[in-house]
Image 1 (tube, rainbow, N blue to C red):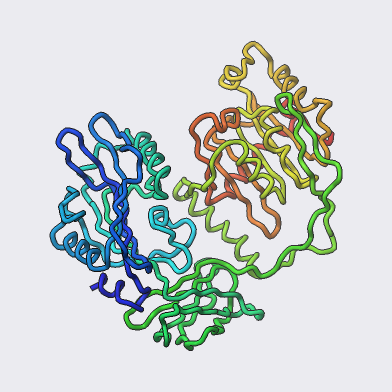
Image 2: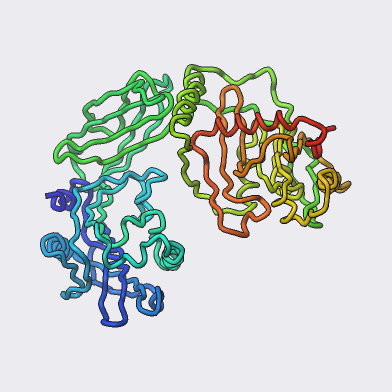
Length: 520
């Protein structure tokens, strides 16, 4: 069975104890205890004692009826085995020899290998799943009967508040894996070896290095599976026997774009290591020159200084073109057709904290080809707090705002004409304290019959000949950024947004819509 395979010495590790962290729900009325989430992590340190400890100083209050407790203790390998078998065969969880949890019938899932790659949701609740990843055995609460009052859509804010309090005590983030609430997970970290890889100088394969556990005298029979894909096509792929040394070179013919490596143990069949990503082929040394004169501008009475990198770069050394650039750029055609069919964008959340500081950091990181802002409530102050932080001198900075009844209400512009509003915006940007050093910025306003009304807010990083665009949905207008709930996430299909911005930008190329331009 999977449990015996994973705990057998030398298969994936040499375990000697098991650390258990229990998150349990306590009901005051009848002293009933329900499993909220339990994880049992196998370790190689010897078992000494149970050392049961309540980690929270006091229970975390859910409501007048329920609270959450957090407990940690250790099990010997024999006790861990007993607990696992009782959970699997009797649907009971034992602590100190007694049944401590009540829960519905659980669904036992076959073993799962969880790689350490970034973005893998379940890594938010596993312990230190770095390096070679972990196997897990999971008991899934499919009904969530005991937790239904917490998992309803209307109580999601309350649940997230509870999860935030749990995170203050233990590094378990259930906010992105609510589906695992009510589950038991047994985690088996792979520690039998350490691996790393680099690209061959010929760029047609990988150079792999292996460091085996000190308890391993002779490495087991293993297979190396190496693949390279571009545009979902396999450009290179091979499976070869491991040579049982500390180093092995594997030629697959092509190593561009996305690469995957799996290191398989033959018997029993287990994944011991994985890699998913790209290798850095070359660096761009065409660095800009730090200009001794910073950009100075005033925001809310405070002077801000931004160090500018000169835009005068080595024009004699253009970006190197290769076939991967052409393939990547042409993926847009397929994306656009798919979007036209589904009328939707596929989006994913970025792990940013929100607030203007995050936007300023993002702008400094990605402004190589310029920055565009698109926000119906955009003001000159918002521009000072965002686009002015672009540190690449001379790149195009474009901003589109709007003036309508809603905007006038927010900014107390009632009774003011469009010309008056534009004059107010212009006065802020023409502040004599702003030196506008190496600035290339234009602000246009949609109003009346000029252009068309819009609602969404975007931060756009335009493409170059060989680099694709990136677009971030802001979730709320900049005038409330960091002050109200919002989600900043990257748009998976950016080019249609860029196209729409450019179309509106051209429509607003009229004196009545241009607020301010520098240089004039």
